[in-house]
Length: 313
Image (cartoon, rainbow, N blue to C red; front, side, top):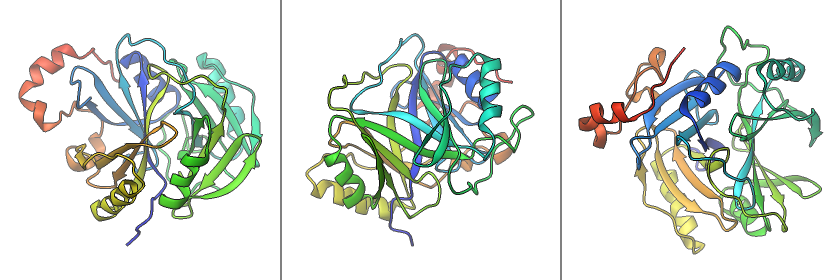
């Protein structure tokens, strides 16, 4: 039994428009929508989950598309950049694909010996495509437009921007079991050896940067993966012992969650692998039905009328 943090589980961000978000992540980036549900606290807002075929932990990017929320601001105290792993020799193809689709991109560059291509989604969310030093063994979700030779494999890592990294680094190393792998300027790379992929957290120390503001184009929280409830509860005790507040276990239908705010201000989640996305839809039909948390099933008609119409293709 693995008692470690098993890298990243999922990352949750905010969007301004459901249709635009769906079109970009399924049609341009080529991800699979593995679940279409609603926000637990606001059932008139969708909650989209994108990932590989099964929605495997370490591939899941989720969104709250709050219609008309307006732009947020990346800054201190939040996750500021999502890194996806892609195959070798795919960055030029991606750059061309992004140009054709009108996607805003930066110039290819290198970080910690790995080539990467920065880009933003339609809300300005910062992402990068990264060719990892070790080839990624995960199976990709492929489409007619995004083939096996370029398709994303899942997360490479996440960047957190902080005024000071020390207290956050202690959480990563002393509680989560990460180790400092290297430093480039004010960027510190931490990696867990418990998994081969989705294993990296970069801490960016920017003491003079403005605080971030959550709205469209920003990340809401970062979820770390554990194998089961027993391990999850052990981590809850470790976090409480450091004097940090953490929620009781919360049933999110597709995993069980704990939430706490780490000392640098980023909202962290610890999520289990089980029960997974096929608990209420067969694998072949993932993401094709609107699934509601049980507390909202009696209100389906009202909720469906309140949600924006989503044209799926």
